[in-house]
Length: 323
Image (cartoon, rainbow, N blue to C red; front, side, top):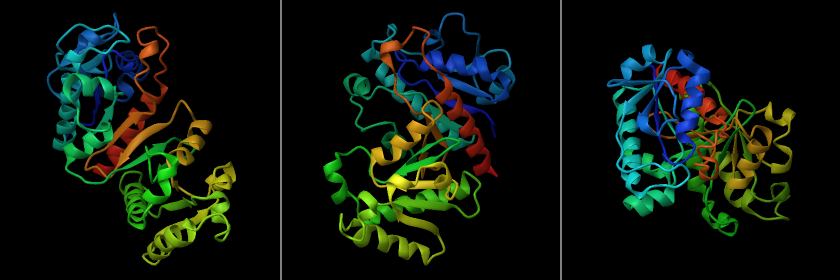
């Protein structure tokens, strides 16, 4: 079984190719990974080792960026997605999933995609990367975690208007989110007894019902039921007091009720090093916590730090799961 990380190329017109090359330049053989994509999309002068099997990546990575070649149709213009590339981007993701499912790769790290480009060029039928990966893996429910050395956060509801959150925040959704997160912290992060901090939805966690009843009617009963099974759950907590340093030392991950409640703290604390992790898949998937950045593609301004952290976390999680 391979110990290398598969890196899907993402949108070729974005910053994916240049941050892949920059990540290899910083890591070299210290963390073997291979890019699935078209070598012609990489920055000029990038040392490349074309491989035919992921098992070759470890030896090749000391001297060049290993590339499992996936040829794309049509020319590349930095910053301008080519509709002819859309199907290739989709096929590369599927190829990466196949490699991690077979054990040929330790984990999958995905460079950012441009969803509109995939919809326009190939009729991509999924809201995003995560939903497509869940489809390929045959699972109904996955959870998004943003992780760094300073904080791990999980939003229970994600890309919906704030006004829709109270209705979407059901006991079943919250319980499923907590269970998937708890299991992943044990299996993939090596924590024997994870401690989870659960945020309230309302200011001051509802203040006993004076500022909303979701903490009493929805969140509290779920926590009571899961605590009876032995889960270490703190809350519901007031979100404005759970992210300072002393508070973060008391838990391993924070379960938040909506997108910004989770993402504002981690992006404030560690903007460049945050990693997007998909929990609940039968394989490890990480991704840098940024988009394709078409506006700066090809200008040498892209920061590879988040991708490097995503590759490092993929290795740690992959080794934990195999163990």
